[in-house]
Length: 194
Image (cartoon, rainbow, N blue to C red; front, side, top):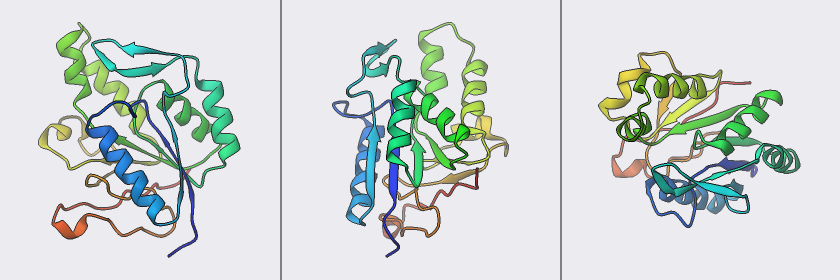
């Protein structure tokens, strides 16, 4: 095994929520910790927050940028994975770019379609935001890619398919995929540099 890394997972979706994103991230955290890595989750817990419009189970942290910056600076992570595009994810993305630290992102749901069903926001605006968020000199990770994810990729983003609970934060040495043996077709997602 390679030497342990300190890994930050930044997510606006975390316990006490129960959904696929939380389950995937918590399982990935467990797998990485079982391999000796230190994993710190930065979530809405401990922040003043408001419910996400039309999805109140998701809490959106308010005024978190300074705290996220402080936590990441003190943590000195070897790797950062940004799992959601909310306030915490935006703050972590900004910190990583300013500090030239490679990071990965992941896209889990059909959020543009979800928003469009509830609010009069053109779906193209949501996809433009997602493209901006994930189209960085780093790698965006995709959970098993259904056809709808092809609608806006068009080869524009550097992406890698990963399976649920796949290890996606190995920067120097890949960590064997914990579920590859079940035929899921899962892989690794690696950043391409600062």
